[in-house]
Image 1: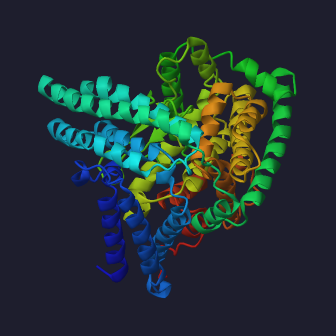
Image 2: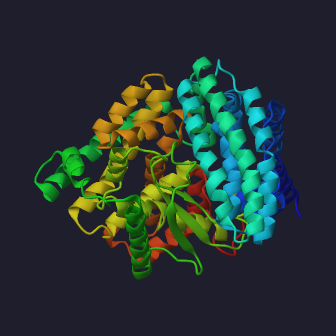
Length: 556
């Protein structure tokens, strides 16, 4: 084992010891019995450790590293620099989901992936459930009313209430034997009681909270440069988002006229939204059918390689996720486990949502829009990409990545499928463009929120008026932007960067003047396979991985 290989292995082992829940999510089952230490001392120690690891990676001589090692080194340093920028922000003092997220995902993931025999899973789940009260006690000690914002606290309380039902009602049904069900029911009841107490604490704490969710221009811009390896800053990114919004608006006016005889694409889509599945169960079935159709299209066209054994299951979103996420999501197969099964979660409403609001949420999942979302989440979006990453990347690149690649790839996947004829009528194409202009609006809103130039309610109005989004979905979306700065900007920013990489790749093969619909499928397949197998790299590193990789058998 050479010096870099040893350093990378030590770094990863340190990561898993510090975050056993994340280690479990990656398929490292030796960590399944522990929850993360969420004490203030542990958070501060992780910040200090990150600074030391960054120094160790920075002092490596790049000239002594191979091509793949340099990519791994640069990914690790980008992750660590990003953490350093956010260390002073102290999310663990601001956001209650820092605690409930670890608690719920630490148990839910065990049964989602089922990487061990069921009795072992029950043992691990019970061990973690017994640590739930400690996690919430640490949260009570850490949250600071001078830093936390009431909006973020309320979001955390809603998520906690969803977790109560999971622990108390749904978790015991995961297992077959009465003995194991009883054990989970008993441990789950104690966890549910602790979670109810946590939610009650947050209700009281919310009245005292007077902090902010605004990350600020300086931090936002540093994250773009130092973590994502992007040129420009928060303001130039906002200008780019607005320019893309304006360009797409013109394209959508033309397509709306073709599809419905009116340039008012917002009105056209709102009318089309009325054609939606009547129930959440019917919505899930429609997503499942669209997902299979997208996979079949890829198999027939050869735009990507489909690894043997991969599958994408289409399921209702977890109950604890529903209060804080109003759109579809995806959970990849664990990076270090044998399975290639991923999970595409469709957006069910929170418990006790009034039926009129359920119907309004269903309108955001209309029959015209469902194909675009299936492409984004499954084929060749997140599921296909993350299976390819799992099979082709190094241990470091299977462990870390950036949403600027992951979400950028999924939006690129939508565009690719439109270019190649997957969407079968102008209305479906209009919905795909809606998904893109929605991401342009996200850039404008996310940057404006964190620059302090747009408040929450104005952001909700912007999303409703500018993207034809139902108001309940818009509220869930904007709450997410407040809680997760820079992520909402990743989709379109990443897509545009991937298109630039593709242009350079095709130009190097004499295909610069060929329309995307006419590029040979085999050439695109080689590009797609190479890019996704390299990982989920910051876009500057992803360009290097594809465009500068030495030919097979050549030296560095």
